[in-house]
Structure formats: structure tokens, C-alpha cells
Image (cartoon, rainbow, N blue to C red; front, side, top):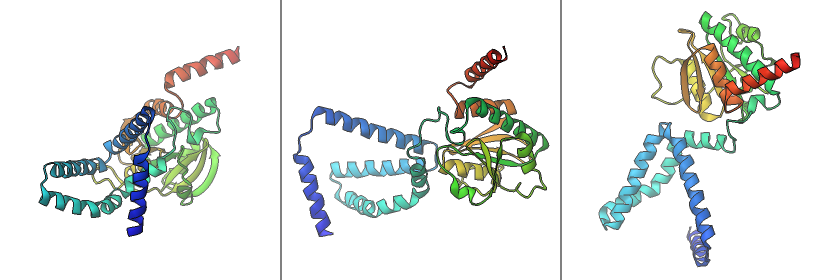
Length: 288
């Protein structure tokens, strides 16, 4: 430990002795601001956000106790800080894992994940088939769980199910989730514009604030969206309500048309209606 401290002190003194230009200071401030911004955005809608607020309050007390020379309080807070760093890593473990799994993912405004190898018209066709199936399942009050893989690869989830690797079809999706189907009790995963695996097991959300009326399917949808950038469609068996989980949040009460617009907005472009109009014009031109 003594040697490590000596090395750390040597490195610190070395960096302090180097004179940096104003440009370095500006870059330094910008990078710190970016880190703070993304950290805040990541924690804002998660239960860890409340804990982070408590940690910030603790640090403020620590700074003020040092400034005002409250020795007893400062000693207690510093003692807690030494052991608290390890405790924070343990407490924030789910959030840290989620952040690391999502690190490096690009903007959701571009064509991503499940559609990376497909043309735009094929994508719109697959979304249309998916939404038709969702509307049918909702009307029949048949429970369903559909995961749209994007940047984060879900090979560990695929291993828990059965590989189907079939074309996206409303009839096939409906049959998979029929009550007598051997693959209905699990999630259907879509990869590269294909119905890639069925009967998959998803991680459940550990959020204790989830509404009690939401069952295991909704908890699985939220859990999957918390640890990846996947978009998860869930249809309630009791009410037939269509919901979409993404980034740890659940949007409920969607119709088939609303679901189609939402998926186009998320997975294809900034504006789904403009894209559809453009595709329609292209189709008219080809027919002529």
C-alpha cells in the first residue's frame, strides 16, 4: 500500500508541474460536463436517482464540514466515505451493468439492431406485420412478449429459447403465442428483421415501484429494457392492452396504428409519417 501511495503522489506531482494551455482547460471542462450530463440523464428515470441525490447531499455535508472546520463531523463523514465507495459499487451494480452494456450504442434515430441488414421497405413491411399481429393478439386477449434486438446483442437470451429464424409474419407471430403452442410461454426475439428465437426467458425488473396490476410479462419487458437498448412489446393477457418498454420506461394503451407509428419513429427515422409518404410516392412512381 505504501508503494502504491508513493507512486500516486509521484504521478500527481508530475501532472501538477505540467503547464496546460487554455485549450486543454476548455476540453477538460467540456468532457466533465458531458460526463455529468449523461450520468444525470441515466439516473434521472431510475430508482438509483434517489440514492444518487442522497450521495450528493452527503458530499455537500462533507465539503461544508471541512470548510467550517467541524472536526468531529468531518472525521465521521470521512470515515464513512472510505467504506462507502465499495458500498456504492455494490448498491449501484445493476445500474453500472446497464450503463456498461449500453456504452457505445449510437443514436436511436438511425436504422439499428434488428433492421441493420434490411432495406427500408422491408423494415416498414415487417413493422406492419408485427403491428397486425399485436392488434389480433390484443383483440383476443392473448398474452405476448416480443423483443426487438438493436445495438446490444442478446445472445444469452437467445440461448434460453428455440431458434426459429423465420420471416416476420403476422400469422406466424399469432400462432406462436396461441395458448396451446409449446413456445407461447416466453418471449419472441426479432434479430436482423427475422423472427429469430421463441420461448426466450427475460430478466425481471427489480424496480419495487412498478404498479401492482402489472404482471410477470410487464416486469420481464421492463427488465429487458433496463439492461439493453432493446424495444419490447408486451400484450396483457388480462386486458389486451398493448405496451412498449424501452430504456426502463413503459408506454401503455397503444393501438395497432399508434404502435406502428411509434416503432417507425424509434427504429427508422426522425419522422415516421414523412418516411411513409416518401415510400408511397416511390411506390406510385414504380407502378407508373
